[in-house]
Image 1 (tube, one colour):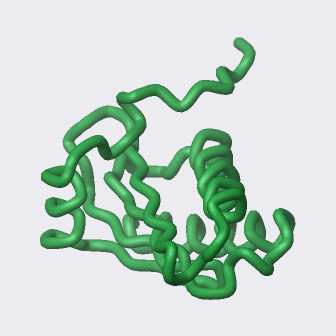
Image 2 (cartoon, rainbow, N blue to C red):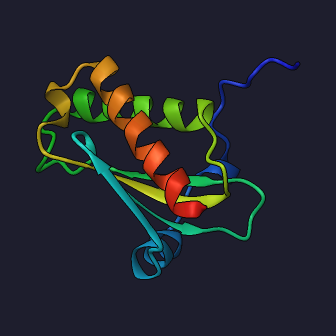
Image 3 (cartoon, rainbow, N blue to C red):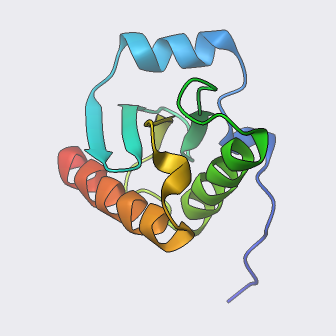
Length: 119
């Protein structure tokens, strides 16, 4: 078994407005928990891709926005979805007050819901 890479390569990211628009306009899966909502669309690519939106309106401090994004990226990398999807994580107001453990627990619930919807 090889060591897991700690990188988040470009191939795993939604990179431009067109990628985001596609997911927003053609959403086939939606799951939410306390930390936020994830919307997604099945992908033709071999791997899933992630986009993250943490609005300044919902999380005031840049350090807190970055922490949320870091945790979501790390969770995405460590827990691949059953089916390849392009997904967008939309942070909710109050997500900055959640502990890292709470945030991971919410992401776990969201991932389970997404995997169930893909069956």
